[in-house]
Length: 568
Image 1 (cartoon, rainbow, N blue to C red):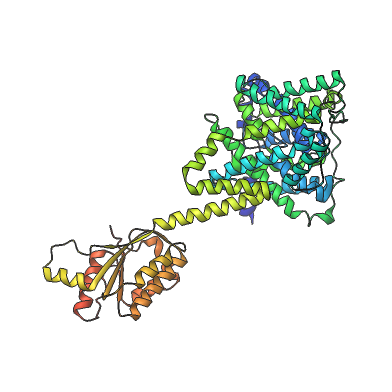
Image 2 (cartoon, helix red, strand yellow; image 1 turned 90 degrees about the horizontal axis):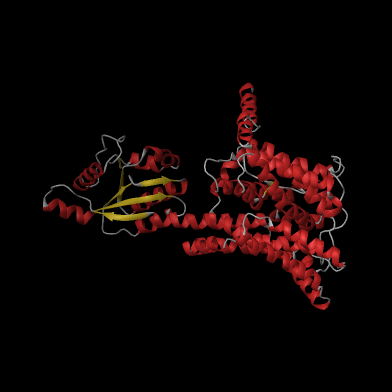
């Protein structure tokens, strides 16, 4: 028990900030402070927009960006990650708000945070590397479509219709807008989106999102455009931390959505951290520590009324591109947003909702990497199928189911590809200098097969069918030195094949069984069957000699002398 507790303590200590983090912060603080300020300017409209889209209000998005952003910056596993509310998480939260209300969302976020901490302690972060690229691309494409559709009501200037299916809600909003068009809202949304998209091409370093939002707000106020509905009143500060929203009796019913939120937070955060690593030289995130930081962030954010948070790919990319080198940049981003909350809440509350919708529409467009999707679609049919299925499932179902479907399909196609690599080939039996009579004898009565690749559940039954069709021979030699792996199914199929051929009077001999594969063959009785009949040999020449002896002696086998050598 002492050892277990000590080991757990060591594992937990490895998740906490260390001296290395402080060293990184001191390296170039001026550059990190400037990067943090830039990210905060970009993050402000996104935090407001995602807060509104989630259903909890703009103040909730700001609280998340400040609290979760600061906690994840300190405890996360990436020096460059910026955390806060994201479009992907908003997609998951909308139906949760509809079913459980704002308090339910806060409870779900708290539960998800605890789950993320548990995953970090269990060292589950390393499994992110097994998510295939087509699943990630399809997931991102689907999220971009959902985010864009979610903005339709605000972009058209109509109240959000009832419903939890984004396609249905968007369609109802379009129908209502055709009956009572609000061209002011449409103009603001399109103008802000256009400024962001065109400006990003001309001057990538300029934060056009905040420029466009400020311009739209000024125009709305000066012109007195009542049709451009503003965000509404915002509190001038963060609320005091509270657990008043927590209902212990409802925790059981919220377990499923909490698992979905935790899975999405883990997936998106680790993906974002990996993207940041790829954009730099010498930066590598710690996946387990990243899960730990995101878990603490999601435990803290609900206490202040914030929605669940994840690592934000768009803001992290801005952070990297503006020269950030340590977690001081993401911490500065949270601090700047906190100052805005306390000092500029009245000004922020006047931003038109349509302008925020334009920001998110442009964000959705920029999330789609057309070149990457084309490359993935052209790679193989399997990759294209996985990408399309994941994207459609993201749009039609939900994000967690979409990832599960993508992983299941990718796994099935990968198994199919591996199974196709496995072969059972008839090979020349004799390479030595023997008489023509011996060659004729071998050609007439003995056949040798070489198994290449894995002998496992996805391919083993094909071998059984091929072996069962062997005819006009008395001895079959199976050369197994090139078998890469054997599972229980493969071992059972091999045993079944040996027994069936035995009943037909055909002796089966094996050669070159690897030491690492003997245990599984022995566990199902296949190895014992061969040993009892004296038919397991270390090398192919020994198996050939045994076959000749068997034929000459009319079935009397001479047991091999060596079973420990492996065929070269």
